[in-house]
Length: 116
Image (cartoon, rainbow, N blue to C red; front, side):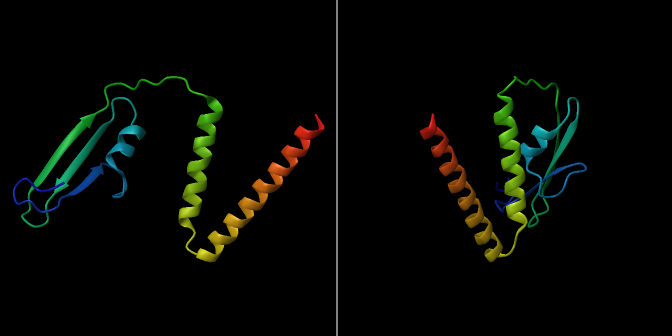
């Protein structure tokens, strides 16, 4: 997004009480009903500033496939763990172990299917 005053890039911060890296969509999805979210935009070239406040009026959810929701949560946790690993060697070893496990699981499943 560009500054409406000078056209330079602006920073976007979501608050209060959220890490600087929090995206607006993550803040909205994590918000509770009636919670207020402040969004601040700043241009560091011309000092233009804007703050907006959003309030979550209501939250509507629908029931989903429980196993799909659980699987998605686990994938998020695994992805976060992988992102925290800085060693390329460790990541390569982990990938090899996962592929080996999947191959073993696949071979076991194929053998079980053939026996039926």
